[in-house]
Length: 143
Image (cartoon, rainbow, N blue to C red):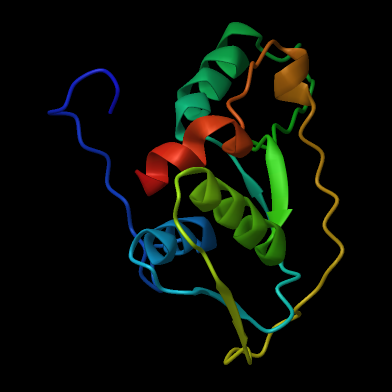
């Protein structure tokens, strides 16, 4: 990490624990085409690891009122698989890496596009200052 070289984060990029983002970054770094399965319309929420603890701190520092039920969706951005591929391609180009995308049939039976409209404003209202994927994180993953 940035604080000390001895602090090493774990990065999984396999089919079990890896995310599309991690897999795409590894594929780009080794010159393998980014593999998009099916239409690439599956959308998920993303949160920079640096913001994870801050979200918990904000929730603790701002407790719910007696009887109030609150839900904090802990993410700051949402991307489809295709949008992630474009972000990784753009980050790779900035670093002089030629990144290609390969669309292949989806081997899983799943909805390839779906309605995803999760709200994630409450933590921002409490003061979260997020780190966004497009603002340097992808560069550090590819380096």
